[in-house]
Amino acid sequence: MAEKEVRLMKGNEVIAHAAVHCGCDGYFGYPITPQSEVMETLMELKPWETTGMVVLQAESEVSSINMVYGGAATGKKVMTSSSSPGVSLMSEGLSYLAAGQLPCLVVNCQRGGPGLGTIQPSQGDYFQACKGGGHGDYHLIVLAPASVQEMYDFVGLGFDLAFKYRTPAMLLADGAIGQMMEKVVFSEQKPRRTDEQVVEECGSWASCGKGKRKHKNVATSLFLQPDELEALNQKLQATYREIEAHEVRYEEYMCDDADYILVAFGSSARISLAAVDMAREQGIKLGLLRPITLYPFPYAPLKAMAERGVKGFISVELNAGQMVEDVRLAVEGKAPVKHFGAMGGMIFNPESVLEALKSNLIK
Amino acid sequence: MAEVEIKAENLVYAKPRLITDTVMHYCPGCSHGTVHKLIAEVIDEMGLEDKTIAVSPVGCSVLAYNYLDVDWIEAAHGRACAVATAAKRLHPEHMVFTYQGDGDLSAIGTAETIHAAARGENIVTIFINNAIYGMTGGQMSPTTLLGMKTATTPYGRDAKLNGFPYKVADMIAHLDGTTYITRQSVHTPANVRKCKKAIRKAFENALAGNGYSMVEVVATCNSGWKMSPVEANKWMEENLLPVYPLGDIKCTTLPK
Image (cartoon, rainbow over all chains, first blue to last red):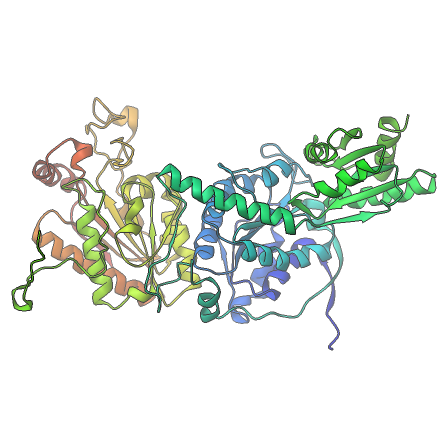
């Protein structure tokens, strides 16, 4: 087997490479810091000359998400990327994509909010990503990369899950993961699906021209009769139950004998990992549970930890306390659950995480 | 009622093959049905049934996908030209068109429309301009005439209060990416024939990769205008057409 290509790259840059490598058909985006390198890298790579991938700079995030909607509705593998304020503008489109059961990938390289906020990293969009954002009862599959390698790997994974369940997927990164440089191992180039393969895979629903099909396909989220709309909602909810049953992903670090557990994702998880090592050196039995999927959330392993006697949990997040609500739901009051965070683009260090543990839980 | 057999030699008119049997929700006298028919005929005559992707708007024609037997994508309000842009770029051999009213296109969808046109996307927009929001109950749209009474301009549109109407087709005709911009109507048999020719020309333009085309159809909304169909046609001729005159606005090729 040929040796895999290893590169040193920014998280945002690998998103672009991963898109090309996984056979993405189209990227539609609008510049916004701290993720503009995604589209810049794609424009440099010129994939339309190699794989035939379309790359287009839209006039707004509203337009780019609706381009994604249009591309996804034809069965193509399409994506966009943005950062927090841009993703707010995309929320309308995400609701339509979810309602239309259209697979796609949206990358949110989060920055500090609310409002125009700052360009520094944040995890303030957890609620928006996991609890809706747009209108109506829907979920996105939300993946939280904690390294440049995961930025790369989750592009392909996100598309696979999106197509498996016919639902939009989101890669919820942050400015730190997007801007940091790390080693990344590239996968082999996957060919883009041919139009015939798209018809074979998605022909039952995709509006890609009738071709040999007798009936028309319509991508729509309009169901004026309430019983019909309820039926769509029931179908969506059934899909979400399937996703919750089969796609929960998380990583444990030193959890087996831990008295206390940190719960953290993305860049917070990296800081928390160092805090665990520091705690262990001081004889404190601390562990880390890192959700990889934020939706579906790893409720079961957290509940199991609480039931086996973990003395307390701290949800460590770059926000005012959002994921902590899910940790509390998981623990069901069996142990104290605290939040430790920083807002507005500020970042904590491992020492302050450890201090929070000591002052909040170890009395 | 018994089926009546019509001999081929006696058949002078039939529903276009690509118009479905679904009963249309449009009000009697509305222009939408006529324009749908023309599009269905053009698609059939050009042999494009299998490779057409149509994009419907939000507004009265939100359900257009129920009536025309091709693949459809129902866009969010105003976003049709963005949706169509991606569909066309990902399926460059296909015929991709949007069907939009004046609320959808000239108000909430202004940015998407102008930028698709400016980029010279090889798509067609059929723009039904009846100067009112029909679906939501007859409110003012950007193309509502000064003095015109609507649900949100009950004393008539006043420029000081409500701003001025604007001419979308004339405006986008200034863009390099647009090559065929025309304004038509369907209120007389002669106009129906001219409109069909324009739609065909626009479709041919898009398939030839000659940039963005728009066929604006100045249309009636007799329910919204609170007139009989006949009165609405007359009112349109006397009031809308002087502001939105019929004819080709631009017919050219993309700049080199």
